[in-house]
Amino acid sequence: MRYNDVIEMLGSEAKDKITKQNGVISSIAFDLYGCIQVLLTPLKVENNHDIKVHGWFDINRMVITKKRKIMNHPSFENKYSELKDVSGPSEKPTTFSNNK
Image (cartoon, rainbow, N blue to C red; front, side, top):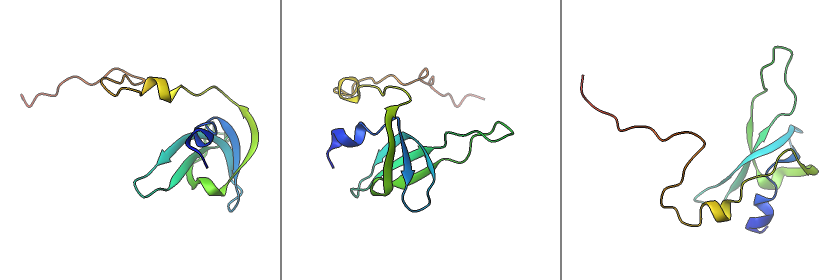
């Protein structure tokens, strides 16, 4: 599987082959040992308006059920081409002081 193919899975609806849990691929993790996992975020909200538990699954267990994306993902290639000062979704924390 190519890197771009994996990134393109972000935002797609998928189902785990083993547990049958389904949801949206909301995050992808590449670890030091070569494993690629996806975070599957459930689509349904329970009666008490709580989102069900998310789950990390090996990418090889995923079946894409709908290629349509619930939203477009950012262009990581452009955003992180130079990792000088990458801004995140919120403001950076201020310097902490040990003054009491």
